[in-house]
Length: 285
Image (cartoon, rainbow, N blue to C red; front, side, top):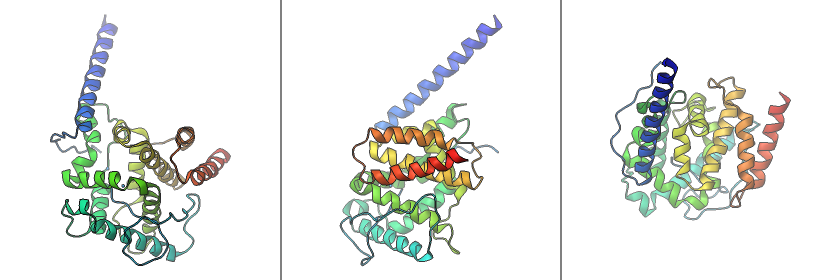
């Protein structure tokens, strides 16, 4: 009798969690976002840049994407960092001149807003473990970016992801290259850390909240976010900073499988080669 009662309670709790998650997802999908109480965990495109050749700072059209830095090797020269920083600022200048950006009242410019967003997100990471233990944790993850950034910045980031969709591959490559190199500078531009980036990589790879965000994006954006999340988690793992024990090889194989079904990746050969190199290293360990 006691076992039956325990089973009944478990099924009831699971049903309530599914109903809560479904309701939250429904509202998010229709952009009717209610207020969410601040959640504090017990003891979490995003503005992105453009890859181009070295040219005058302000550009209006997306240039051909530059080659990516191998995720398995550190940057070779410090001058590369300033090259990527210049590209990022150039793309932010381009955004500043776009009508849809002006609607959000970014008076300080999108580059400074980017740094502000990175700082906010780095200081308030998402829940990685136990997000489904109660409805508050689940809601906190499902609404994470809206809750941390506020409505204006969350919609600004979503608008950029939508309007600059055709530039997504070179833009995300640039942001990854810049932010990973920025942390090695004596005076970094961005207030973040490998631990903070790892937390977001884990968020998109293993949590219900992170996966729900990607489910509302197009297939290319979803793949790219998971790809760079994997590179960050792998980097953290090499630095012995993988406290959640994320299985890099498992998620790598999932990416390789999903990539077979995608026909809209411009840099497919680059991703395949980097994942191949990464898999060889992991298998040899």
